[in-house]
Amino acid sequence: MYNSWIFKVIIAGAGGVGKTAMVTRYCTGQFQDRYKMTIGAGFNTKSEVLDTGETVKMQLWDFAGEKRFRELLPDYCKGASGAFICFDLTDYDTFRDVPDWLKIIRQKAGFIPIILLGMKWDLKNHEIDPEVAHDYAEKAKCNQCVFCSSKEDLNIVESFQAMSKWLIYYASQD
Image (cartoon, rainbow, N blue to C red):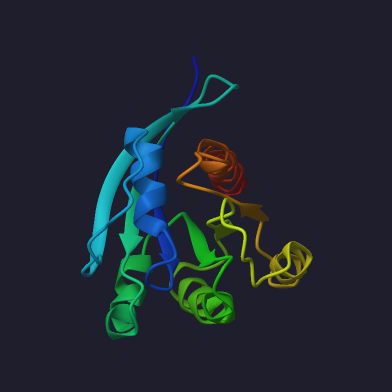
């Protein structure tokens, strides 16, 4: 008999980095060029069957990235089992905000698995060197740093599969 798990996962990062596009790509397999700004938080669920036979259902809380909504994030973090912190590889300012997101999540959710996601890998004008992002993730004790493209469907499913495995690992340590 294989285990079935349910976890709350926060998706955070500055506005416009591609959080909603990533969640939509993962949950529906679709990509849209235009999205309306998320107000508060979006909510989706998706189950992932791992190569171990275990099933992980993730409750995905896609948090609005604009500064005016940031004060709401701590309440959404309560009870979270994991988090993705996203930044736009073509906009250094969104990477500069990562420590703020990390601090809020760690203060309210504790030491949960966090995967740092560099979004828009398909675009050419990167402002963040991948090595810098990997080094930051390691120093900040994030579990991984992954570069993704929702448009090209690159590393989206793989990132959620990795998160699923981290979630099970952390839950099994309790």
